[in-house]
Length: 552
Image 1 (cartoon, helix red, strand yellow):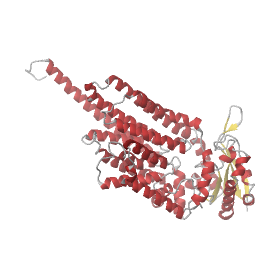
Image 2: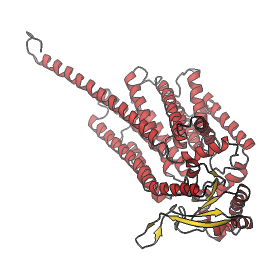
Image 3: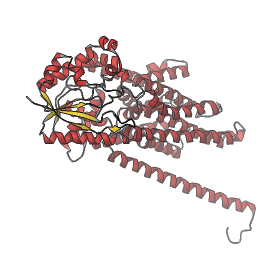
Image 4: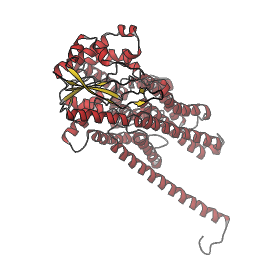
């Protein structure tokens, strides 16, 4: 109140409105400060927990490629070679910068990619009708990207295939949204979107499901197939064709050995849908409330984009099905659900400011529905992190850590220069090669094809008998020519995802070549970290191993 100014209701309202503006400004400052602090914390956590997940094996495979070994011949990998080729960059840098671990170099490179992907996406949003003249809204979108790329991705997924796929493909997904599909973009920006998308969609063959789903969605929306001939599509499809040609020319073993084996047996290498049902529930709950509770609003400039993102969510559901429902494949789906709800939140703000004045939709109903969706997204995040950190991480990490440490100790005690594995799971075989000077001299770092033969009967085994024969013969070649000093064999009472014992040595010994090669090895000890069950029987997967040494 200014001295001498008469007190009126208008003056009081002006003072209160000024105070409200101040409070809003302080709230924004607190929000952005907290967001930046959370991003910094996420970077710290990702850096500190970089040595997690399947990245360890992929980095080891990349190191083996750099040493001169051939992918699919000396290194039997289920993925197409692009992900291993990409990992050769941090592996090469780590070989020259020995003070920093290869996983940390990978994390640093992925952080640079996060910046690039966010920068390209923000440049695209600068052409969005609702974001073009609003720097604060573009800043909020940038924070959303950082949240999805840094906080939404657990350390086990950061820098892995699904994370890289989303980082590289999201600018293209954004480019095809209704608000940006017809926007006039600089040629340099379109090239950046196309080149990033080309690499992203080639990381895994399953990514083609998402690409085809996008094409169908856009063609249905525009009632025209013109997207098929867009510059971005031509570059992505051309790059994919060239990539497959390169794989055929330089890694033909993938097509005549790995791919037929995957088609026959990879469907058995899964945790099962009973475990993954909890992952689907939060995303489906959010999508259900969006589709049933939100009122149709044709005047909203955000609704078409939100429905487009819902269609992308459907494509990612198909992507999960194509990946046997593995937990890490839910990351892109949950991320797209988050983008969908973010667009609906901006729609709510728009309706509250503009449409409510015209009486289009009661603001109270809009607010309640959006709050419900946001709560469900929070639940989705909690379930995702709980599943990754607890069910697939914290509960198995202590046993895996003990097993790897015991393997490394045994290698040092026997002064072994090389070792091999008969193990159906990840990391227990690859990690000793990263933590010691010993070389991994068997080409199968995990026997992903064997659960099918443990689960099925004689008819299946007879139909696909060539597969275990091929594996046993290649293992025999490794033992005869590479002569690994030690062999680690999984003897867990529950074979991986099969839940019953399975003797790998006895099964492969039906092949004469393997039987002859195996006679050079003698049993030395067993390590057992299996927890006793309530019935008094030991149970578990990847908790018991027999160790053999080469005798002659």
